[in-house]
Length: 204
Image (cartoon, rainbow, N blue to C red; front, side, top):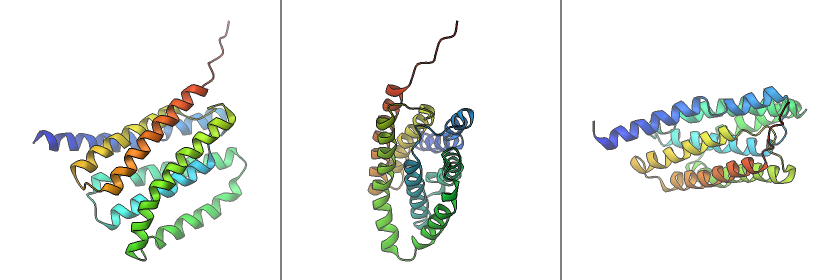
């Protein structure tokens, strides 16, 4: 096997493996604290929207499955995480409207080719907005609360590997720009989480 091909396989499989546990640290933090403090609901909704668009776009254009197979995995985890945040925020009544919007949007995306193309271009802005929403939440509370730096670190890793796999396979500029922007914003969120992380109290 050629070195380039081996590196591509390693990047694809490591991304998939990381995505299997991507949201688990965040979910565990919410359950342990029984609180969604510091976690932005707006950020989660925007992030989920971006992931759904990307999955629809890549499947529509028949991209190699290993280059986007992690999206269904992340989407399932994001949905569960969203339900946790709605529950701990006392907003479970919003679950049904969100479900209707996401399902309707999924089917509308491929009604016309221009819709899916435009949506993919817009998804970078939507996903960037999701990171900025989380940053704004952190800036406002000045407390990273139950926000998991581990989850954001894993997300940064997957963005870095997807930059590599995109360059090695489809060379899709739209997808490439998206991952570069997401990587930069993920790193910014991690730095902000660590900045506002309160030191653990010492016990005698």
